[in-house]
Image 1 (cartoon, one colour):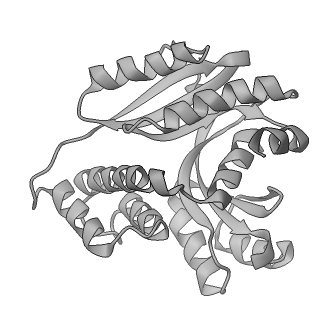
Image 2 (cartoon, helix red, strand yellow):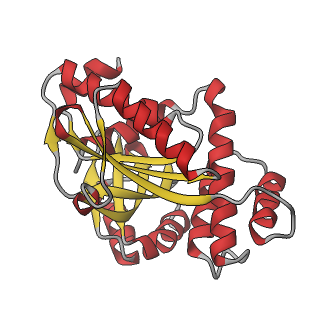
Length: 250
């Protein structure tokens, strides 16, 4: 499994910093609006909306805020119309990066994403240059203390999960995108608490980053991209050994 999956797990455990919580809420609300606009307001008939609403609830977004976002998405309330745009690029050391954005101005966002790459030693790539190295999956994180591997496998695989991997302090359950909600529901019904559940683009190959300077250079790009208001998800194909990862995140 890619090092970026480990990094995602560590960031989740740390939790959202107070100063970033408002920005996190804004990103989640955009995702709900777009999901409702494209698939309708009924979560039972709109799996993407169901996933985004669950993600927002996990982050403690107020229920009335979620409901207003759904209504803006369906047109019941007036709001900005966001467009989904995906950018591709390279971080230092040849690491492929896939960036998913929601924007009301494609030209502005594209220029700003390009600037982030340039400032941090990377480069924006042409469409299709790196996307082939990723596949969309459902990703569920479960704290290691919440369940044994055997118990988790029994429930998750029976519900349709594809794989379970050890990420140190967490188990990572991987599903097909359409099976994410069903596997999550099965785990919750079995009394296994969920740390997080989301759709992600997981890398099929990885670039090893075996020294701290290389790892820091790549993580600077990832952090800068994730800090952009229009960026919703960033995925990359690097692998960092545990001892290096501990050093750069200490």
